[in-house]
Image (cartoon, rainbow, N blue to C red):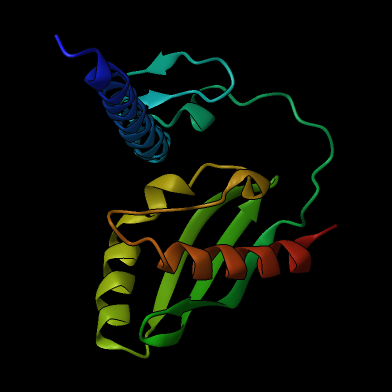
Length: 166
């Protein structure tokens, strides 16, 4: 074997290992995000136990709570986010009871055709990630392929939190 090519081979092998390891780590990070947003069966975030009854873990066993941080009621706000088509908006209405979101709805207010498509996808699939959750713990990232609309939802939810503070 030619000794002059050995350092080049070692560097090439090291580069392949580093790139492959980075790709695997990136893929695993993406899968972890998806698992936390689409649990099936529902996994309790506090204990890691599974509830296979179909009842969200947050409703399966309610932790003892102190005084509520937010006033009970129904609140609405319009959230904004930037998309390739421009500034988009989405209307959000939630009902709170003891800091927990008991109902939620969104009203699409798209500017672009893509905005309309992704807001419709979001509207059809977001409730599973917010109903039964403490409002302060809800921060959405990607919902069924819609990755920008959740930013508008989160913006509206932050406004609602400010309105509902006790």
